[in-house]
Image (tube, rainbow, N blue to C red):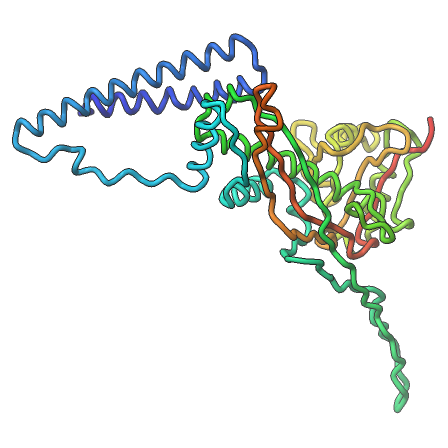
Length: 375
């Protein structure tokens, strides 16, 4: 039979789950109703916590009256706050007192952001990732070794496969955002989780977009070299329309990869996938209408929100073996609080930056489907 304390703890867990859901909804909409609901649930949680404390106090009193050891003494010592939690606590206290508090967020935050970023990113996980402190050089295969017939007692014709290096540098990606002091005051140490989630999502999306569409060039390495702008010219298929594509064009793009189709992935927008879903062979749909397309011609499909709308000259689809795209992480994401910067508006600035670079190791391993240049 459950004790009163166990019943209250179960009730508290249920309310805390609702508090988390209400908080996420409040951040999305910031409506008065959502804020009131969050505050009401938070108050309920506090009231149940007070009931639990009262029950614990009564139990401790009973133990003392019976000559036992107070339960408070039997309990383990409170667990010390982690570096991450302590930083959040200091930030909240500084904001509540109106003082200035700035500095680097703990390394634990950077690690959490990196892990969350890996889960959120759709494209980065398909690529080859290197960790390095400085510029990193990747040796890339070039022309293949040539095998040919040799006459008896004849000489072997020498072939030299060209192996070229590509240098991955340390380009800087950065972001600066603001968080209201009211949110920080309500969140307590959970402010760290909020910051980690927001920056992990932002950097994951930016990295994915740069891998696909980065405008860096070999001669000007100030930006990441993306696939769409650096794929082999012979691997680019242009649609006959500026607004839609045909099955023949999709198939032709995939076939451009030749042997590199073995480990390839197709990356496109949901809009394009919806068009492909409607393709017919005569009067029969080519893809099952009651299920989502996960493969085309045996190649896995990845949907990305980074693609532009289907319009003149826009990239509609990228297909390739992404292991031939190399990323170098020189430095993990570093965050710093700058609450003095926005003190006049009652906000705290959070600045994030990372050092990263990306490049195609082999342009022939990718193919691109583009829309017609004009209507």
